[in-house]
Image (cartoon, rainbow, N blue to C red):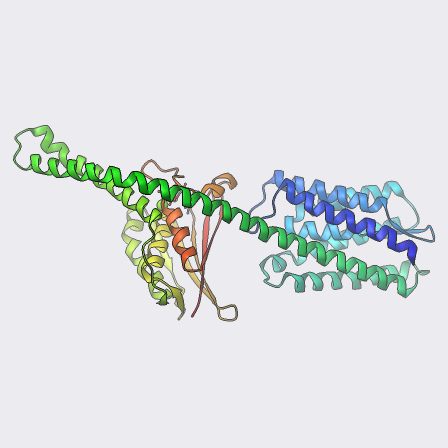
Length: 414
Ligand code: ADP
Ligand code: MG
């Protein structure tokens, strides 16, 4: 028995350290579309980890090799998709063939089965809130198939061996998933911290400058309005509305800056989110029609959330406006409301068929002054994020270049 403990510990150490290293190269994040390059990196890391596991197998009577490479195959398939999973299976199988031995074909077959099962349950796993439960189900399914195959082909092994092997397998596998989940959460909190820090700095900066600029602008605006009234100068007559417009725009930008610095007071009340969402959609429908964008909301859920109605509305308008502005030509902006009574949350999902964003752009959204529009301020998303956070909600962006963007706002229900 002691002889199997040592390789087991080596296997476990390899898998854990590779998990941490993968996070170092590419910090784990939820709900992001991995690029081919990122998938390749995850594939390489898991294939390397699995190979190392194979180098330290648990040998039984010098005839069969057991190791925990299946953990790498299943986990990488579940989290990173079929490409890295398949890559790992191919590498592992190739090495298995090179090693050779009596039970070569079985070694290859069980690797493929591990991959296939992980792939089959991947969607379920990704969407589930109880990942450990689904992960356990996957490992039990795999083990029943695995055990049946081994039982009939490798007749000389005892039941106790399988039990010890499975327990070690299960614990390592669940621990790996647990580590990935914990790192994902940590990465998110870290990003949030950096973001909040930037917000505070910008806010203070904005406040000090904005006040100084606002006063002269008001004076200039007043004079232009005054001169315009009884002037005979044709040019001044023609261009003064334009000047006033631009001044108003400048003033609006400054008002927005000040909002960042000194958030308005808000009241937590019970808000009819369904009504608020359809009101916001109706409000922006003319803008949509003007840009050939159909706005669509069919939620109709009866639901009250905790928050400040004015703030939530402002946030929804910012999000829907961005969605409309992302569409060039015809397109659809679809809003949905999902209520999860058990978890006491409401999810507002706003999906557009616009230009989408790259991973790099996605990271910048919500940062002060980040905009890709000629007349943009780069403040809308920042204000939205702040307003939603203030009432204890969260906001998430998912996007694919050329396909569109999905924004999910999660709020607590009453
Ligand atoms: P603004 O709208 O003034 O540019 P925002 O903070 O609202 O400022 O948005 C910042 C940037 O994020 C936008 O310029 C745009 O590039 C990007 N963005 C926001 N929402 C979307 C979306 N739904 N689809 C594509 N890009 C978006
Ligand atoms: Mg905007």
